[in-house]
Image (tube, rainbow, N blue to C red):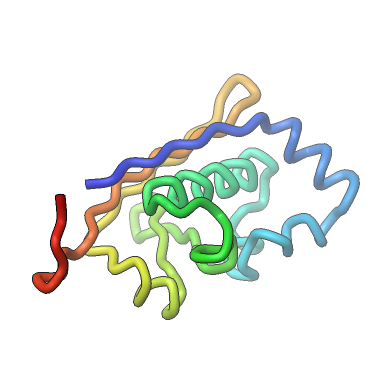
Length: 125
């Protein structure tokens, strides 16, 4: 199991939204997420979630995983979940995952736990 966490100041996101407007959201959110995240706290939570996911996968946001490779959704109970686009799914091979997002006191935090599929042909330490 791999775990990732991230925390972000909500006012940092507010400043970026004030300066860049919708372009800021479009830089890291999928159109589906833009519809879902109405409040600045939620947008900050999505930022933290994507960073936490990239940390759990051990690659960070970069060549192996971009912000747009990750889509945050809510299940039928309103719990946050995530999916990867097809290319990222093939690369990272997630078996199961759990995502928690929270915000309070001017901060948004996300924690993710990911279990990866083990390929029998690979050697692991």
